[in-house]
Image: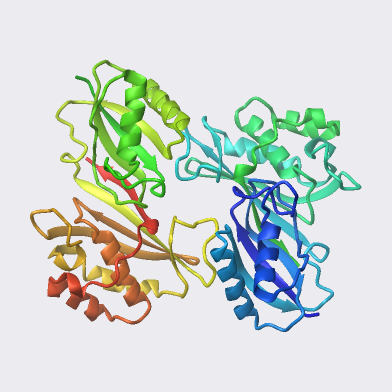
Length: 247
Length: 247
């Protein structure tokens, strides 16, 4: 069967998350529904990463096997038409025909995420649900310094959900950069793969460094503790964006 | 009575516009409601500009007269708490105590707007309602060249709504810049004041230039016609942001 790779953008707010679940609408279910309405086929698509409810995607990647051959641009346009008619907040940015050994999840060599924190006294009106609102200034330089102690290959037990199903807590964090643009702080994280809630756990802990409550050494000590209880408060899903997948 | 100047951000989507109206919720009504719940006072506030339904604000400015003296920061925080409790998509960014000859509308010396166009094949999922989606590439350089023929003091009859209530169609456009950032085209417009639907009329006309349908001379001829029928299609409210007011 011809296999198609698709790059997907979605608003995390109306969904229980990427993955199809019994308890509400999912981004995966939205796309599978559009494929069914277009082709009459019941397919199970696979995404490069599972995002939690409220987490957004600008560059999730999926693959799907369809029974007939499509011109990729036409498949893209037709799926977007069906998604739009259903009122879904999901958009297919690009479709490519790929070989059947391409797997959106297992072929991925690197995943890139962005976490956005809005630092100001007033709550967000336009960016509500799209940022973590922190009503005080954070020191981005200090956050970046603390972040550098987390880059590399480590046991990230401190920074993963107790519900994480990965066999190993060891991951290699290739990049964890913190920059400021006005009242917005942006954290960019890249790795081959992440643990469940890892980036939100890192963001919540870096916020403590940005407030001056934790030193760079405190952040390093939390990593070294390999103990979930040593983690700072987990940051909300609102500010997290799945940006890009490399293959 | 002490007068307060406030800088206001709002999401235009849930409102019939800035101005209080009978036919639905307004941003003005949201703030007046918050003031009433906080102080028990029924006040009529004045904004620097009236925005239509769907038009957003990042820096609308208003003034309000209250019977008692407030610490500005406390007034700001208290109003935001009341706006949040009411589920309004309005946020007060800053409050200043001002002299009673300050008038948000009549003291304004310049108003700044931004119009955002997303040019790509796929519809926006994250930016739905926040951009004008145009599913083809536009030539930003050509749009900028056409825009420069509109800068200056002109009779803008072509570019104002037939419902515009201004006495004169003459306005001085200080700035009309078109730039590109990836698949986003941004139009920045500044003037002491604008006519009703002027920026959306200009944006819709510049889009024709960006598509290559109209030449720079066609845009200039539309201005010179001083005839509403010479205007291009009016751009939707989604992409328009009231950014800043100078005093």
